[in-house]
Length: 145
Image 1 (tube, helix red, strand yellow):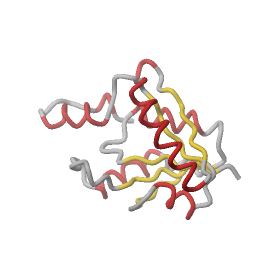
Image 2: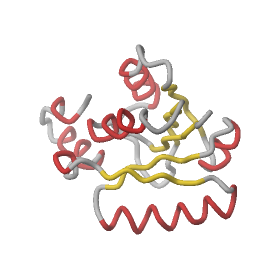
Image 3: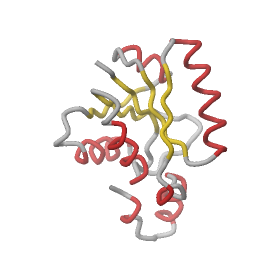
């Protein structure tokens, strides 16, 4: 089985993230969305709410699981026998960042990273943008699946 981990803090999980998962289902037998704790970020939406919200999105898709993890993504991937780490890329800045992490992950574990480019209509959407809009009382529903 081709198992991929799709890691992130997903604070919140946006339509861009959802699109990556839907497109990746054509490539993988199973996708595990791993909600990791990023110690460098201040969380806006509680972890339990993020977990429940993402699980609801994929209630009818048995090939997608959602789990919370702490620690290195490669360790989480190894625990689940995943051969791939799935990431979305919105820009050249994202690409450079992801390339460096992919190389480190490959050296640490042998796990390959697969990058999917974000569709142009979602490229401007980031969790940071959505959190900022939310903090200013704006409706963010158009950015969420």
